[in-house]
Image 1 (cartoon, rainbow, N blue to C red):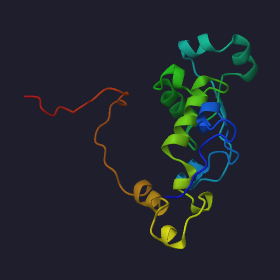
Image 2: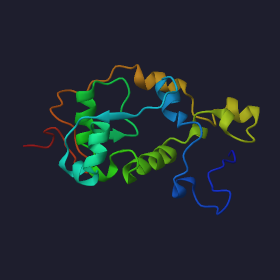
Image 3: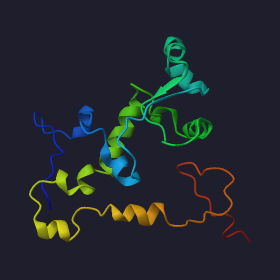
Length: 170
């Protein structure tokens, strides 16, 4: 397996324990989604009572809404606002919040950049590269451009809820 630098050089803790921001701006999404490398920030004019309690009135007034570190790209604001309403308040990627830190930590843990880009790995042999040690970004096309049928979805299924869609009723 390739040696990966995932530890702090000073204390040997995990990178996310210190909220170290990635110098490359979290290329994972850009590689997976095939998007240009741009910083995605937004100020949404949404009303979520719990968020308004967390943010100061000055912060909301100065920005004209709730400042997020990340929002889904290329999606209308009303859809983004609805998406954000379904995320627990403590997990919302509001700029400067613990939710923004949590999002970065999860991204680093779930989709490490070295799994997508062989140039980010140390000491890979040509055989390992050709053998697919690093995840093939071509898989992205299989997932994103294939036809998926979800059926009739009235509302999103929240975390922790299981919905069998009427299976087992009888």
